[in-house]
Length: 132
View 1 (cartoon, helix red, strand yellow):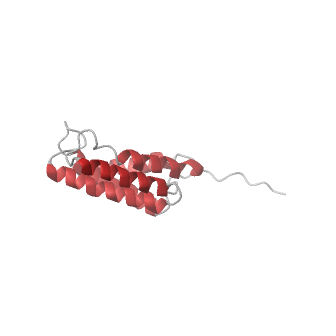
View 2 (cartoon, rainbow, N blue to C red):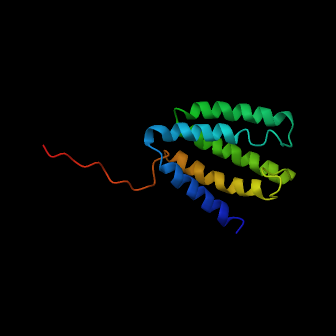
View 3 (spheres, rainbow, N blue to C red):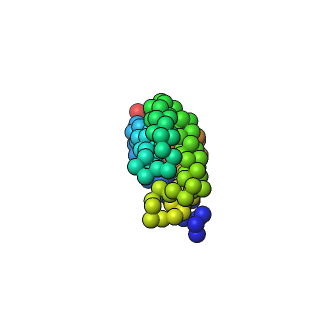
């Protein structure tokens, strides 16, 4: 279950993000990357490197405003940061020992979706055609 639940969370996250209109979806995802870059700052275990990582993720988020590939790269960068925190024993959620491990499994699911262009996976009805 320690692998299945994070995979499911990644899929649910992608489905929820798919509900956003196309014109807003990439912007919201870029904000998500910026936030993900800062989650370890307050209780991080890598000192000044936490701030350096947050800076890198902020730049990646900015670039992601124009290109989905940067957002995907951001999720993969965060995956690596999650792995380091898991190995150090300094998880995202201090009360949940495997929370960084779970995040490291969830994030690549979102990254793959971003690399595929962040298209909606929710089947919406096409607009009604107007016969002329």
